[in-house]
Structures are given as C-alpha cells and as structure tokens.
Image (cartoon, rainbow, N blue to C red; front, side, top):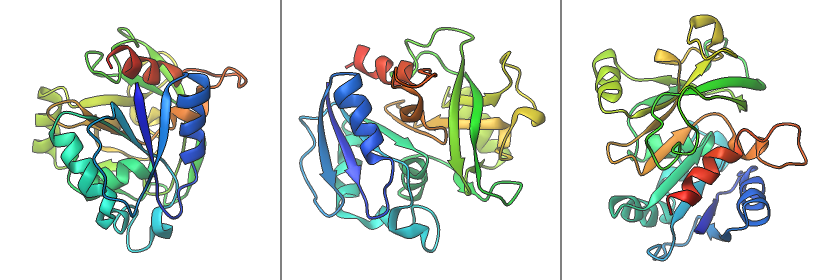
Length: 229
C-alpha cells in the first residue's frame, strides 16, 4: 500500500503516523507538503495527522482547509481514494466538507488527554474490516475541540447509512454518558462519508500501534486498510 502523510505547519503527529505505516506496518510511505497541489492517483491512502495546524487559529482546521494539498485530497477522495483524518485531521476534513458535522469544545471546556474505549459501530468498512464484531479498542485521545456535533435528523441519517464508525464506550462496549469523554452527540468518536472511503476520528490509533508500547489496539485500523488495499 502506498501511503501519504500530510504535513501542515503545526502538525505534531505526522512523524508518529509515518513511523507506524513505514516502519511498523512496512508500507511505502511518503510526505505530502501542505503547499503542494499534486496528483495523488498512485496513492492508496492519504492521512491527515493530528496536531495544531496553523496553531488552531480561528478554529481548529479552519485555515488548513485552504491549503493547496486539500484540492488534491478532495479530487483523490471523489475518485474513491481512502482518506484518514486523525484528531486535527478529522477537524480539517469537516472544515473542507469531506465529512459531515462539526467539532466543538469539549463539554468540560478542558483539554483532555487520556486513554478511552471505543466500539466499532460499522465493522464493514475499509477502516474496520479486520476489527471483528463487538471489538472494543483502547485508544488515547488528546484534544480540546473534540466534541462531535450534528443535528438530530442528520445524526439519524448517518446511523441509517452506517456512517458512524466508532463510538465511545466502556471496557465492555456499553455506550453511555459516563463513557463519553467530551460530550459528542451519540457518543460519536469517528464518522465516514457516504461512500465510506473517507473517515475521521478523534482518538489516535497511531499512538497505540507500536509493539514497543504496552497497547497495540490502534494497529488493527491500519491493518484493515492494508488488507483492503
């Protein structure tokens, strides 16, 4: 699988993603600079990493949305290319309209950095096909504007279309207000577009995918993409 990692000013998880895909998962991986509008047709996956693109000025992801590389990613996605946005990358995908909804301040109004549990709401996507039914993953979060919001009618449509991919839950897979770390509507932790080739998620799978760490739950997401490439 040929992968591209986008680098914005303020990205701080780009090297983590590169390391996991290149050195842990043994995939061909390249850097994609935010100022370059390039042809991505030879790529199988483009990752928008976490961090604070453009310092999160105005709104998280609001300025990065105008970077030239976004034009390339939009065309890539429209042609069926797989795009994964993690944390700030998720925020960018929402800002540029590749995914529905918005991310607002955490309900606590505080930055949250801790491990959380997520369950797979739709196991039949390129991002989750190797996860299996009823799998609960432990994945870290680190965000301030991570509360997913969309109006109730649109949320129902996402659920009917199978676009909700991950939800926050407890260790047993139970979804509740207590297991929701940031106040996201429906405990949504990750969503996809209608075609299921673009997905954004607030948890950081690249931070729990190296065997040197005690947790490798995030590796299954990357393995799913490799299996489906």
